[in-house]
Each structure stands twice: as C-alpha cells, then as structure tokens.
Image (tube, rainbow, N blue to C red):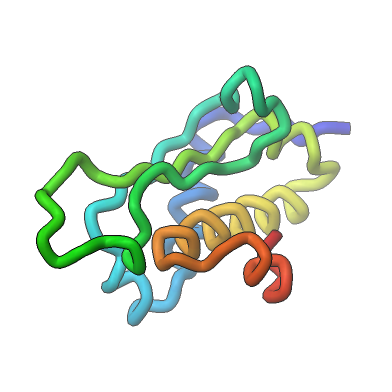
Length: 117
C-alpha cells in the first residue's frame, strides 16, 4: 500500500535529505536547484529522480555561466513504492544522494556499489 503524504510534507523530506549531506560536500554543490515534481517524464514512469546538468568533472574552466543544473525528485513513484513513512524517508534520502552524486560525476555503476541505486 502506498504512503500518503501531501506535497508540503514531501518537500520537507527532500529538504531534510539535502540537510543530511555532509557540509564539506554540500559546500561544493555549485549552481544546482532541487525541484519536486509529482510525475516523472511520460517515457520513464518509474523514475524516482533525475540529474539534468553538467557534472563538475565534465565542466571546463572556460564554460560560460549557464542556467543552474537541476535535480528532480519525483513524488508519485516514491510514494507508490513505499509501504511506510520510514521507508519513504529512506528512499527520498537515497534518491537525493544519488542525484547529488551525479553532480559530482559519480556514475550509476559506482552508486550501485555504494548502495545508492
């Protein structure tokens, strides 16, 4: 059975997950905005999160300033996959860490090894 939670409370969970990132890493997050969307893209209905941008490892020193990179956290699939609030809190945390890791250039294979898949 899916967890029920309003958008404001869900956004607070995402904020808590971001606050849980160690300060030394959070200080290195550059030009990124985190957005909560209810639904993932239609062609990926089970997607939990998405990093849309250029990772720090791929940026050159001469890269022009651009719009911020974006991290999307998709509310509906996370709510539907969890049976308890505790499970949702953990899945949101893992999703946020996973997408922030992409900002640092960590790929999915390495995230799987680290338990953030």
